[in-house]
Length: 614
Image (cartoon, rainbow, N blue to C red; front, side):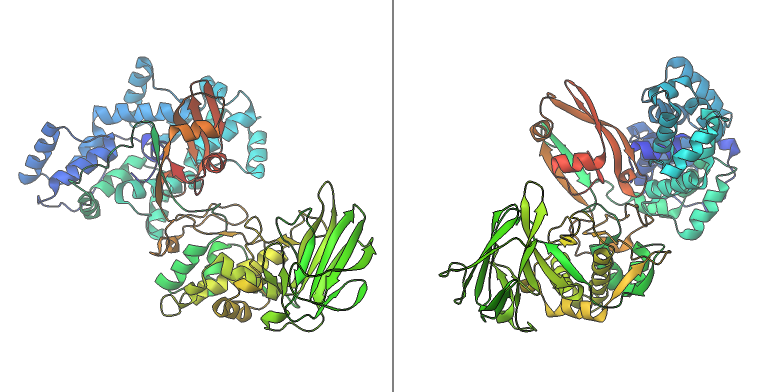
């Protein structure tokens, strides 16, 4: 199925109605080859199991005798088994347990009588048992309601509002409101479409059914979808193929989507929109960075790039042309070494011969807060005028400076360079220059979008290092390879978008995060979560993925907890297949349980994203 049991339970389990309450007008579909596949798929959707041999034969014969196909989903939705399965799902979703015999019998009768979603939510989520499970506080109950009904955590504003409402409304009343909300109805419609038809609803269908769910239960939509010719066609896909083999004993099989945090622009998604959908740069940026507009920043602000790994090291730089200068001393040099002498002093050496181990001449000592090395002449595009950092072998535009940072490390090396030149070394490290030529050149729009996103991210500012650095050269900021990474194809994208940024509604430069692959839905955050149809471009190896992991690896990642048994209690954001990204999950070990975010598990186990199932 397209989503996890918990997410599907929200759309199906909480909304059962009797067949008598349904008024359907599907187009009858005559019996034909493939009826057995439809019977199998319908049982999987409504009952969570395959049909028995007898059930399969009964329905196939019925279709051959003239019974319309829509009779099957109607019958399944009215069966005692459906009612019992759905009551059990409701209990598991809300209370993390199966119903007792009395509770099962009571709710089966309620559902048979056509009980509405809001009544069920009010009674179960309003129970003392649920409140205790949620921690017994108003904040705990509201947070749990959001996670279990809306599949996300409440924002600060959400929480503040409902804490105020909790003083005058019951937990059941709050739950009923959430279940009846537009957000919940939209989520349930989308889940049903994905579960039954394997796709998102078209915009008009989403609006129509979301409004309809004000007055009818979700099962009406489920039956209509499962009565369609599209469902019959989809049921044939993979029908008769053997299921994949189970993972070997002692291993866990993961399936997941995307690579990275999922916030902001998907780089592969941008390429997909450019090549497969024909979008231009502005359309791509507007899609991923909702609420922003295009703008231009005048000038070319200098950036101070912390070269990660240089903390506590000396700066040794060389230039083939031999036209270097060093702060505080006259002359031109081919190599300079700035060495930290103490917490407040540097000792500086220079040489007239290029290289990293020349015959050094001591120039002297200085107590300056930083000492810089730069070219005495404009560098232009001449490789011999670039500054080579002897620690890494990389060459840079601008200057290299050994700066005092304070703290236990004391010093670090930064590359001071203009924003536009810096971007020439960032963009080709963030996306492949090859993309510019994909689709007969359509991919260039995605490369230009990357240039704008990278520029905005830079100019929005980063205060992690105080005044001595404005950014860094690793993936924790933006990957930066210096002069040697530059490519004419990405240079063209930087030049074509010179100064271009995204602006917030207040006119500030937006901090435009981006990542490799969203998996089909962005994660939200500073920008609204959006469907990412571009992400499934054939060049994206990370749109969906699988990996098998030894249980011992999980045990090593969480030492001292004993044998790993299973994952339990998944809470997801409800966006996309598998139920969306994991917001909370419980790891069950022999010694007890541990609850973490999906991202914490991702980091501990080395998964590609927090959008995974196991």
